Length: 194
Image (cartoon, rainbow, N blue to C red; front, side, top):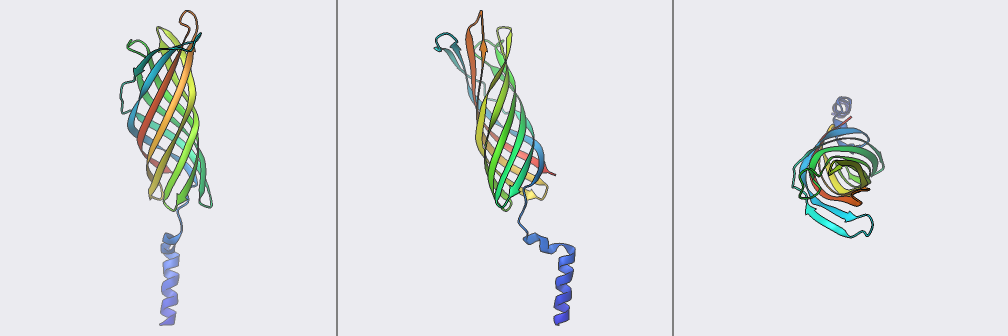
């Protein structure tokens, strides 16, 4: 009977079933898509005085995002970085010709892993293309947020993420105005880990 038990244990180990007890490792390259709700407002203010001249809620949208990133796990801590592009557009004010679009984010992430569950905070740089009465400018600013992920399979990850973004751009003469965009986003994410 003892020999049978030893042989059975060896067979289980050789087939990899013992690996089921090993904790999940979040190290690797990730990529995927995200879908969710984006809300916020646009603010036009004077470059001279800083006074707010108009404040308009941006149209609620459910844009699709694409992301690629890398994670490294040390103990239970996970550090990483990510680039996200969101195909999102709305108006700066009541004039439909004044728009912003193409949100790009470059973010750092720091999280903690509970085996296949990973919770994290994120912060980074954000950019938007702004168009105001025919003038174009690149709006820059910050993005930060929180998220949680679950590895449903060794290479398949689903998650939820909430972020806040604020970017601004200056329009000089003859406008002398600053356009500021404040956005809140809640997204469902589905990705692959390589």
